[in-house]
Amino acid sequence: MPQVLKAPLVVEFPFTRSLGPVQSAFLTGLRERVVLGVRTGDGRVLVPPVEYDPVTAEEIRDLVEVAPTGTVTTWAWNHAPRRGQPLDTPFAWALVQLDGADTALLHALDVPGPDAVRTGMRVRVRWAAERTGAITDIACFEPYDGDPTPPGDHTGAFEEPVTGIVAPARLDYTYSPGRAQSDYIAALSGRRTVGERCPSCRKVYVPPRGACPTCGVATSEQVEVGPSGTVTTFCIVNIKAAHPANLDIDVPYVYGHIALDGADLALHGRIAGIPYDEVRMGLRVEPVWTEGARYPDHYRPTGEPDADYDTYKELL
Image 1 (cartoon, rainbow, N blue to C red):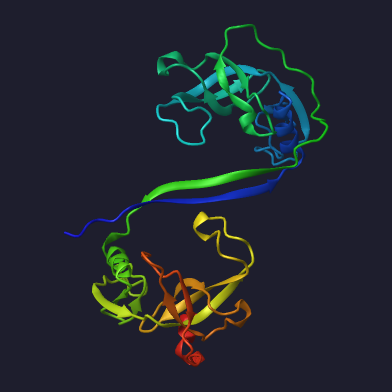
Image 2: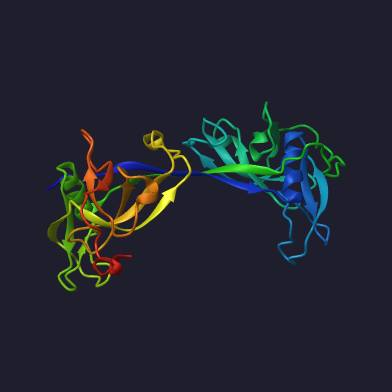
């Protein structure tokens, strides 16, 4: 039985967003060790605050300060904290209803173990030593057995308010390609490109998926394609790549869809060896391999005449 391939993969990007007046005041308040909620038309105080009443959809802007102490309404134990979570030791995720609020705020609760947390226990905010205007300005909650802290009367007006945030989005997962793509990857290590032919429509798909996306039937017949191909569509990239493996690529550069000879599906790859403004649909290209690589580094022109549009129009 062939080895089952798997590899850790990460999808990550920074999401930048602007803040409206309510969220701006809330995050700026955290920077100043103030917790703000918003009062609805019927008198409820929502923490964290929102800009529209979730019941009536009415716009709400009446900011009100609540206390940094509160009560655990429910909780769950996190025995194995992950990268980027509030604490690096086991902790409880808790919904905490702060004094003066009618809703609960989700955050970490620092306790020694699950036996030390219960619904109804009293807690208080532990502020981060350095605060920038983010939810992480609350480092966590901690047990508290003192007197309730009366809410203040801050109106939400601050100097130098926070107007935007960058929220990193990241997904870590383990990918297993399956039989068809494992064969495809194994062939690439030998500088060959193989697809699979559908027994019904007879189209050759590269990379193969083990089934025809059109007919829905299983595929198993391997077909070697390329190595040359035709550029079907392309784009000019003007933003420097963030991934370390691509930092040495100068902009602008071209990324294109390339229909390898014998394939009925275009794959994508970087096109080099030609000025970016001379890349065009129909350009004939071939792969360029680097020493020890398991896939082509880029594609370059072969010097052949451009392909006729009718030969690749179905692959656009």
